[in-house]
Length: 86
Image 1 (cartoon, rainbow, N blue to C red):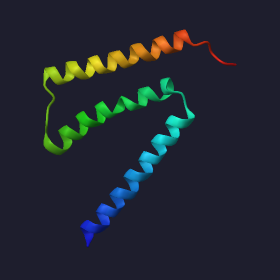
Image 2: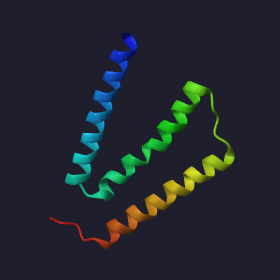
Image 3: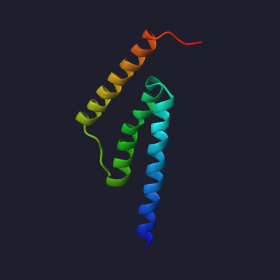
C-alpha cells in the first residue's frame, strides 16, 4: 500500500511540475526561462552523486560546460538583438 501511495504522490507532483513548466513557457520569454532549464544539469550531477555515488568524468563535465556555454551565448545574443520593451 505504501508503494501505491508513493507512486500516486509522484504522479501528482510530476504532473503539477509539468503543468507549471508549460505555463511558464507560455507566459514568459524563453530567454528568461532558459537559465532555469540548465539547472537540470546541476540536479543530475547532484542526484547522481547522492543516490549512486556517481562522480562525473572529465568528458561529462566538459560536455555539460559546452551545453551551458552554448545556451548562455544564445541567451546573451537574444538579449542584445532585441530592444528592451518599456
